[in-house]
Length: 80
Image (cartoon, rainbow, N blue to C red; front, side, top):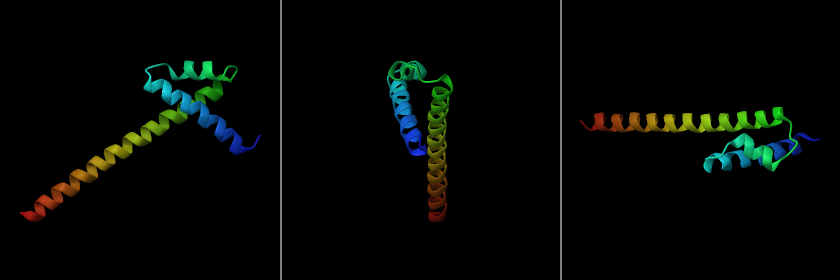
């Protein structure tokens, strides 16, 4: 199996997991139901990828907030 095919399969599983979270359902159970027979390690890896993406998005939001605050404070200080 090519790495591209593997990434596409993982992306499909992650998409199901992400939607399950939006719907307040268990991501692992949703992926198991959508892709029966998928090894637990594959599902676990996909769940870890989903969690890492969410963590990255959180950090980016924090960094934007900090950047925004620093810029706003600098502009206000320069105006004084």
